[in-house]
Amino acid sequence: MHKIVVSLLFVFGPHFAGAQGIKPVSVSYENLMRCFPELQDEKLSFKVDLNRLKDIMDEKFVTSQSQLRQRKIHYLNADKELMNLILRTKFAGAKKVETELILQQVDEKGVITDIKLTNNQRLNPNQDTINNFLLNGVIKSDEYSYNDTKLNNVISTYRRNFKEIQEIDLNDREGKRSVHCENQKDLGIICTCSKK
Image (tube, rainbow, N blue to C red):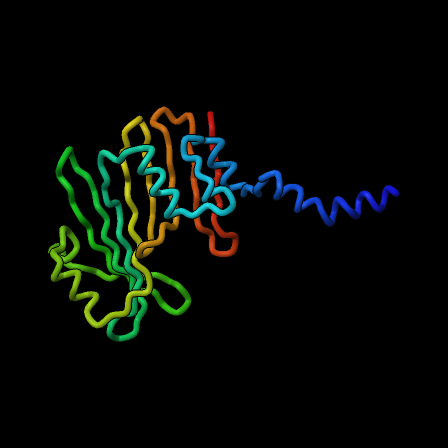
């Protein structure tokens, strides 16, 4: 008799759970809710979508200032060599912004060698300088990293490749809670929560 009850629960258990409206929730979503319950969204509960999460974060915590920290373009140049073109933004003072251009060659083993640039090319490069490096190249990835200062004492950083968010952090200014979500190649999207 006991075996029959266990068998029936095994066969019909999922149907009863579905009839009661119980839906599976991912561990990443649970971590997200533990730190920032105000980001609750049923569409994220089974699988966290970082683009959707960013939209919800922007709705709940309005951005007062967004600053590009870095842009990294991984590409094949005209000679079919793998290259990295990196633009780093430095903030010196309230409104003064400096941009540094870094050019790197990547060999077949992944070893990176910095290419020496003139000061005119390296510091605050104009668009023509950047375009000359990319001319007749094939872009493999184009990653942007941003700092977002939000209202309600919250700070966010995120990284995207083309239009897909790859990594996102949300922290309150007091450092009492923070969440980090990242799209890891083999594992999918992993979110971790830290609370003090």
